[in-house]
Image: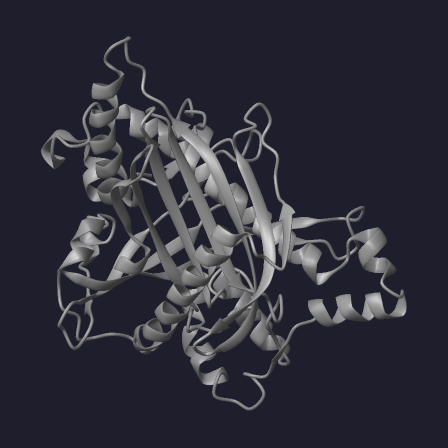
Length: 415
């Protein structure tokens, strides 16, 4: 690890925001654990059905929570999935489960966050010219992260127990997420950067039946991982061999964004994924996400030129980097930081003038928007968990040491 005394202004603001984001995230976790145990949600609804896997269940919910910083309306979802089951000949089931318990513990607590993203298969071009000719079907040769699925994590900052200030991970260390058991006596927290793959802006100015355009967006979340979210339990209750998992609180991106709700703008919020191995050998996984209800969907400046800067940040690329000096100058001018959300006020107005029929008949409501967003979280969890099975089964012994593992597992550069 390397000390970094040359933090940018954005990094300093991010680190200043970590304590409150972590405190609120832990408060949300404790509230959810009790609400889930009592099934005391204010509103709960079934979220998704998975064909031919009736044991996979999910539900969403709405409620109100009292945090140390005040009362907030929240929404969230919970999903339970079958993960794996050992194959052992009669008489060896007990030995197989004991061995498998050590394997799943090592995989989840040490390696999962390094290999949780993966690239979809794509055709191999016959030649370099074929790949660059511009002919053929769109998407045949995906560029950069266009075909990556799952969760991607990189560790950027940390705070050790007893240290007064945070440090920064060296560039070459960022993909190799630390063994989560090191939180027991070494780390107080770690800040992660979490890119959101396959995310795009769907532009439908003339409705669903009119012309549409999908614009790929480069977006990400900042997360803070702490021991409060790490689960490492052996024999937690009868019938359960072990529980192992991780989670984190969300920290808002300190940079302005066109999003009022979504990537980079979810705080207060937390996410957690926990695997459970039963005495039978069956492994299941439970994923939960809870966040404050959106106060706005978009966050547009009253200055039209600022829209270009906001959109440029979402799309990314060299052009956005090139206009940074102009953006820094523009941000200092009056009105550039005054923003508004055109979505939720329009939704409220439509329901006001139609006496609620826009929500009842057309699904135009804040709840409908939130439920669609929660379903996207469900899909991302589902893709991540199902995709990780290929890697989990690829390694014969996860406890054999890093020298026996493929390089992509050790470095965390799985894609």
